[in-house]
Amino acid sequence: MFILLRHLIFNRENLLPVPVPDFTKRLCCGWATLLVLLFCPASSGYAEPSVDVQKLSVAIVQSEEGGSYAEFSDALRKTLGDRVLTHVEIDLDKPIPNAGLVVAVGMKAATTVAASNAPAVLNVLIPKAGYEKLLRDFPRRASSHTFGAIFLDQPVHRQVLLITSILPDKKNVGLLYSSPPKELPQFRKELLEHGLSLHVQAVNPGLPLSESLQELLHSSEVMLAQPDAAVYNSSTIRNILLATYRSSVPLIGYSSGYVKAGALCAVFSSPVQIATQTAALIRQFGDLHVLPVAQYPQEFEVLVNEQVARSLGLQIKSAAKLHDEISAENGGEP
View: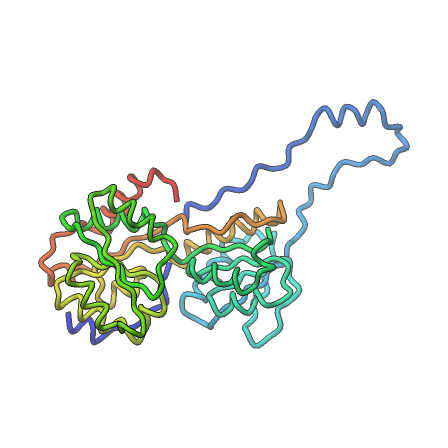
């Protein structure tokens, strides 16, 4: 385990969808056509609507070069290889182009683009809490039908199903946070429905991380990490992994990087999967000029650290088996 921790890298790659289907094409109204033919003179100049698809310019704004951001952008281009859309990729040091739709990749890019005059913005690879902060910081975006997101987080039920599938004998789940997540009541409810109890602990100036973690470990059999940057970041994760390992409390991560670093497992969506979902939303926007409500990733992966499982004396299922069980319980819905 210490070898694993020594090689810990806070990996933003592989952070994170069945593609969202295209909306039904416009229906031709036979009665309307008949009325036009009957009541409009031949000289009225009536013409059939054009069937040409107007190209939509899409700008991709990345928080950083390389890593999961570049993987997402590359996959998005490949997915939209039909050339219906054109692509302009810029960095944060350049002005936001006058594009029909801006895809902001990562929280830094999302904040910059939200403050700009970009008329339509789709944010990806950002946590739900980060998106909610954007709506608070930029109120005009909150009421817009052209400001959306695909979250980095996984839906609550998917996380709960991972815990119950990989650790069926564990009944006490610990959740550490800097501020209570809005999903906390849902976590309690869904865990209770599976016979599990949720134990929470806040990290604050009066009770720093090390003390908060130790307090929570006393009542927890498994820890569930969340994308809370004030708690889980490159400066804290090594100590968190050490503390949970010494207490024989497995940590459930939220990215492949956490599993490679020493977490037992994680359910997450890859940049490629997010790109597939993004492409579908872009096509929808091209037809309707409206973005759907912010949503969770649809496709997902499961990764397991078998060496950590052996070190903790756990007999666990394979990642493929876990994925199949979660998908079956999930009923195919996000």
